[in-house]
Amino acid sequence: MTAWVLITGGSRGIGAATALRCAAAGWDVAINYAQDSAAAQALAGRVHALGRRALALQADVSDEGQVARMFERLDAEGGRLAGLVNNAGVVAPAARLETMSPARWRRLFDVNVIGTLLCCQHAARRMSTAHGGTGGAIVNLSSRAAEYGSAGIYVDYAATKGAVDTLTKGLARELITEGIRVNGVRPGIIETDIHATSGVDPAGAAATLPIQRLGRAEEVAEAIAWLLSDAASYTVGALLDVAGGR
Ligand code: NAP
Image 1 (cartoon, rainbow, N blue to C red):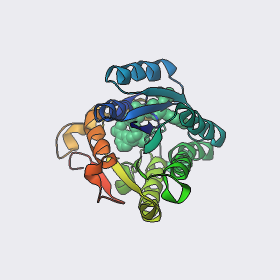
Image 2 (cartoon, rainbow, N blue to C red; image 1 turned 180 degrees about the horizontal axis):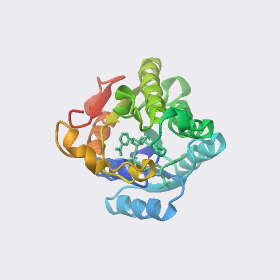
Image 3 (cartoon, helix red, strand yellow; image 1 turned 90 degrees about the vertical axis):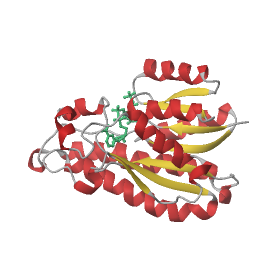
Image 4 (cartoon, helix red, strand yellow; image 1 turned 60 degrees about the vertical axis):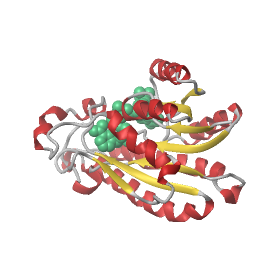
């Protein structure tokens, strides 16, 4: 029997491209989403059409109970969980720090950091050889913003991705002896719906990038799929920039 990969925020953008790329690589794909059931179900249909099992799972990754129930629903399907992609992430309207609310910071950290921690915890309990599992791979979606800081746009979002990078490096060292490889991918500016929330039109940034264009979700999915695969068997704790030279 093939193995499951669970992709959080898999219904759109980078997550959806990753779901299709993983299905083509032979994974059964569990597609987590927050709200857009129709998009998740439609994507599940496309994964089925590639000959793989697909499951759409609603859960807010920041909610402990919802995450626990999501993993239990996946358990009930049968089969081994061998991959996790922590892709669900949110931004907020572009702003300077002085005008931001603590509620906004809490939401960004809840989804981007606590959500990643929760899903890593549930996946590790299933994959770890110390818990009777047979190993696996985790890929955390960070951002190039973790390094350059997004001054004047969303320093809080950038800080959440800095936390994801640190988690990725530490957890990689903690789990590698139990058969789990943990790595990160740091996209640059990718053409997805996420930019509508910030209110910053990404098209304007294209000319400032060394590669002179925005990235496509499929180009990020390719890196994620490689890190999940056995081809990356000696890659542990890496932060792979997929950012056109940014
Ligand atoms: P996107 O197009 O906005 O899609 C976000 C996905 O996450 C959707 O499937 C959404 O589900 C889901 N989601 C949002 N909040 C959630 C929650 N609380 N629980 C579960 N699912 C949730 O985003 P994207 O651009 O593909 O970004 C994917 C990841 O890459 C994010 O972590 C982002 O920070 C990172 N990234 C993106 C870029 C970029 O330029 N696009 C650059 C650097 C890093 P619903 O549709 O159901 O709401």
